[in-house]
Amino acid sequence: MKDLTLKSNTEEFMIYMEDSNTNIMEETSMIINSQENLESFFKVFNATKTPKITIPKVDFNSQCVLVVATGEKPSGGYSVMKPTLEPGKINSYFFKIKSPGPKDLVTMSLTTPGMIVIANQPANEVEINLLDE
Image (tube, rainbow, N blue to C red; front, top):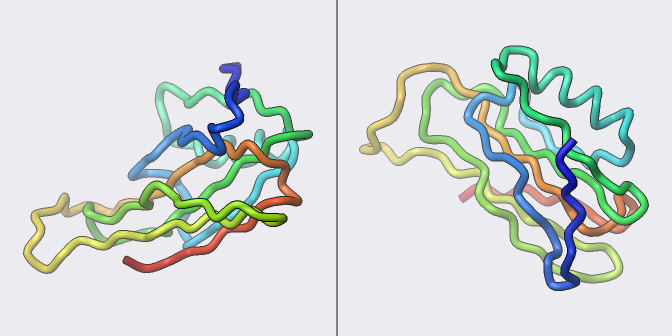
């Protein structure tokens, strides 16, 4: 497993992966708070991937994993943007969902875009907010 412990106090989060095919069919946001839940998530995430994506090593005492997915989309051009963080007693992560413009050239195939973030706070100290761009 890849060690993703964030070494600096200034690093509040790290984007582990952005993907246009997450295998998550419904719009979803989740905070993963245990190794068991992380492994269950990656079982679905990796279902159609070759090679499989490595499950990150996470210290769930001080970190958690944030997952945001758009659900199934009819074409390319959709994505989850890098989050902004408002620190506080509860750290608020704001993710924007980007849609293609009417004149954008996009791949004409079904996609399931999403993002996986390693947060440098435990699960009970974070929340996810979704915004449309």
